[in-house]
Length: 162
Image (cartoon, rainbow, N blue to C red; front, side):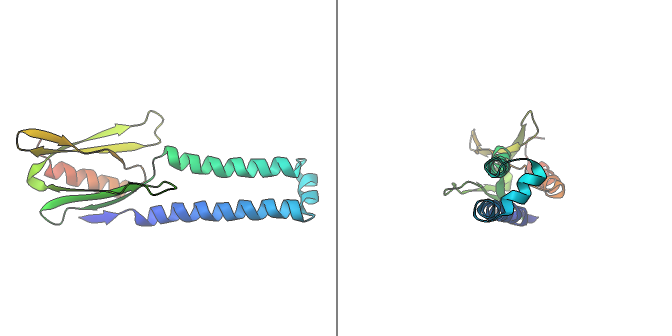
C-alpha cells in the first residue's frame, strides 16, 4: 500500500494564502475607499476594529493548524521495507524525516492523543539486534479516516509484537 496526504496539505496551504490575500485586500479597501462607511453603518464597528477582527481570525486559523500539528505524510510498504516520510508544516524550513524500516525488524507502534483531540501522534519502534530503536513521533491528524485506517492496519499486519 502506498499513499500520501499531499492533496490535503496543499488545500490547507492554499486556504492560508487565500485568506491572507482576502484579509489584506479587505483591510486595504477599508482604509483607502469609502467602503468603511457602509461597513460601519451595517455593523456599528469602526474600520480599525474590523481590521483587528480580521487579523485575529486569520492568526487564529493559522494557530489552529499549528496546534493540530499539520504534517505531510507519505507511506509505502510495497517493498521489503516500510518507508515513512513526513514533515510538519511550518513557516521556515521544517526538518524533513524519512524512516526505512525492514519489515522483519518492525516491532510495534504507539499512538498518543491530545486531551483536546486536536492531534494524534504515531511513534514507530524497530528491533536492532538486542535493542529497540524508537523513532521520533509524527502527527497523523491530517490523514483522512480511510488513510488512517489503512496505515494502522498495515502497521498491525507487519508488527512483531502482537
